[in-house]
Length: 215
Length: 152
Image 1 (spheres, each protein chain N blue to C red):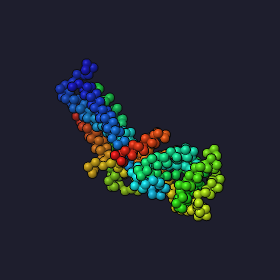
Image 2 (cartoon, rainbow over the protein chains, first blue to last red):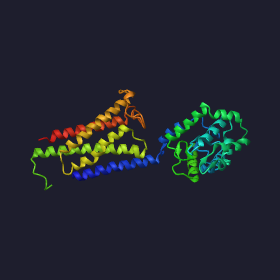
Image 3 (cartoon, rainbow over the protein chains, first blue to last red):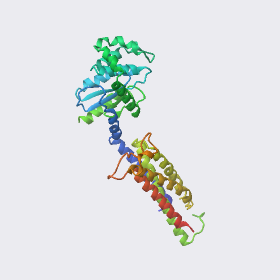
């Protein structure tokens, strides 16, 4: 065989193996290893979780209470939970990306200690445009809207500055950074990130994971 | 091959052996390059700092060695061998890190991906730093052999 022919064949074989490997790898469990790694960071116990504890499809949402898209997506995600009762659960992690929203996250974290996380979140979302103006957060303006939730306000204020709340905030921030969360809301379904943002894309990812978990 | 100088039988045999050795080096370098690219680009495993230094030594060989194959030029050893040797040293250093022979305190890369942490293990002992060390060492050995065979 001519040397040049040998060289070209060897080159093509190596490139072919690379391409074949890439196709096989991607068709196999795409990003399964990355998802498994993400799961470690996503499975923090402090995160408020709603849905059946033994549900095999786990949505982890990084949200900012001041983020409009998070508010807009909230009913949509709740619908997904309702439509897949027992099979899908949702955990919320906080990524306070808006200036000043860390204070509101503290309210949420403190409300969680009174088992009032979800009603507080809903009250904050419902009044979001009252305390967030032009993406600037005025946490003090949110207080009146929390009246109906039934929180022990004295305790809430004390808990907001507690080490436990501070630790949860720091943990969420560190994990968000490690997972590359740069915008909210960011969803992970069983560790798989939403590669393209959108409601249909999220629904598709949930369905895909549900089919894997409940064949 | 009209442009090639006229060679005696011995010279031609040496030339053929040298060509095969450089070709084999290129095969190893290309397989290693595609292997590391597969891990970072397809499997999306972030390369650690030491991996980058090894890549700097490995990637040029993929381009440089074929240039010496057509037509064969034994002097490529002069340019390729230093890269292969530096790569061997860096890869072996990382191998020692993963084995824990070199203590944690003098690890050069604590930020980002730790170099002492292996992403996967085959059959209980085959890791990327081990493969890299063997690949660089094999290329170095083949190039030294090329030098021996073709030195006249």
